[in-house]
Length: 390
Image (tube, rainbow, N blue to C red; front, side, top):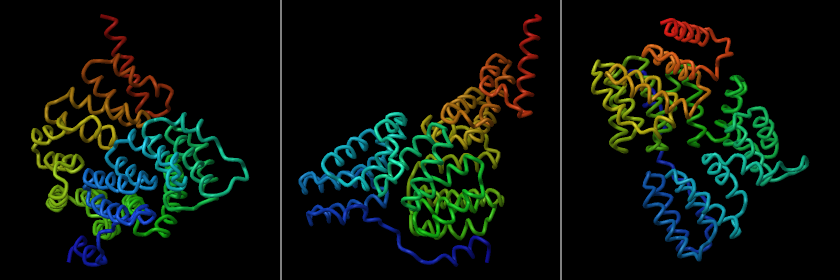
């Protein structure tokens, strides 16, 4: 039996998990039943139907604020952050408890880059503050600081929040901050703690998958991914993890089977289309691979800047140099600190005989001690000087 087959055979049989969310708190019995049914649709990925059902529950229960928090959850998943924020603020105004409102509200605000508004509206709690609300506000401030790249105050705020409430989600936020601070040991320890507290939570399982993948524990990735997939069949994380393992193992047929299986659940998934393009490129179908990449939206590229270099290379190999550069440009706009994106685009501009463009791209990192940065700067300056000489 192969490695993947062993992992699948060892994975415990589980039913897809359907979280009831806040629905059990709904007072009206009929609205509560509708809310729970909407949560089932939500777990299947039927967000529009779930939203419609949640709105019916809200109408049937005289605008009960707790239902608004569930409506906001669906809207967040649909990436309708502005609407979600309005629902959460109305829920809070109507009396929904802060413990149910604040954290999703903070996530929507940060996603809309309202970090400064968040920090001003929710000042730092007093040094002796206690309780869930204080923990949530400190976490919200940590999220805002992290989004602004202020890692030290983000870490301090998150440490205070964890001292009040050590939840799995909070541990994962602190782990992410530690990872960005290059403290890999602390990040791993925090992920392990979160996973121990909530071994069947989708976020903790995803974080553990990432940790196993970073450690190149391919057997561990396969085993956990099968368990996660059975609990969360529409979540792409477990299949993505297996695809990456199979690509490393040069088992392209198995990777394709994973892509096909997920696309049967969610046709035209951008992530799976990306992996489809990777497989086509590996099979030397450069034109077919490039056509897929050319169809990728700016939003997808900016939400996955870590994939941009490979997407750009596929476009370039397919004969689309400017589209390749555009992919890198979109990704760099979303992740300006990813120096490899900046270097790749600068190198491309140099190859296109545009040293001034390369210099502009390298400007923000011109003082870096990275030899690759200094080499490109030297090449760009030399090219500019040569052009001036003529």
